[in-house]
Image 1 (tube, helix red, strand yellow):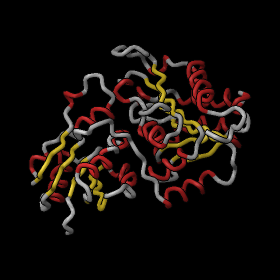
Image 2: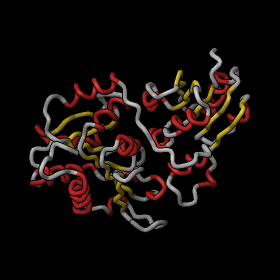
Image 3: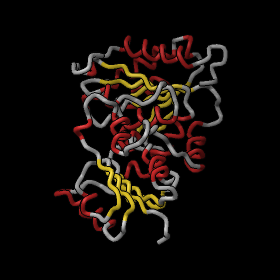
Image 4: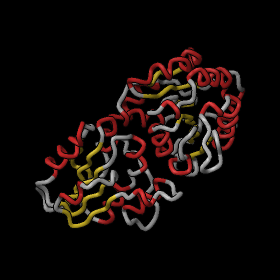
Length: 316
């Protein structure tokens, strides 16, 4: 092992939390210059860190019964003297390892701040740790193969979520596509559906509605290549999901659809991250079905008008 400071970054099994906490990578480099970082995260998020600066190893952990994943992670890390252990999960693992410093997430900090800000507090950062996607040549090449040579602008759409109550109905996504196809602002645009291997049923109606103008990026790549695909889109609209956070972190103008969840805490981060919530009042919750197709269409058009140059629609 080299003489560089060894840092363990334990992040989530959820893509969204991994993205929202990704600014810790740069912050670790500032607080421990030259650090060699070991990242522990869920398997679906592992690719996000393969090209991250300072990362020398990614440990992929999957939840097990009776907290077996924590025991496995302890066995994989207990032999190292860590300069710092950063734990997004707020578990007790950091206290069972030899560490010079510990940065451990505390849910008591969730008092109205965005989660990106609470992660920054965890790291004792001087400012907000901006989420970041670390693309590599492999991801860019895979994305280029999916998008193809057509230079028409792309609206990326993610009609998926980990929870049913966060999922805007699939038939409404299809109706939205039909309306946007007929909208002059989206003349010539393509509609790209993104998601994981299990998301085909949710994406199928919108993809069918897109027809020849559709791009199927559902289950065709890992999360980093999906991020590269989204980075190549002009706009993004999606449910409250990990892909929504990926889109915002790539800098793609993003509209996130929120139902009965804390949109103020988990909004897509950044100036270009917009929220359309079924209830815009903090602490009030309505079903995501309260968002009509009219509501979402208006939101997409507003996002378009804010970020797309009408005189040069190929430029996001």
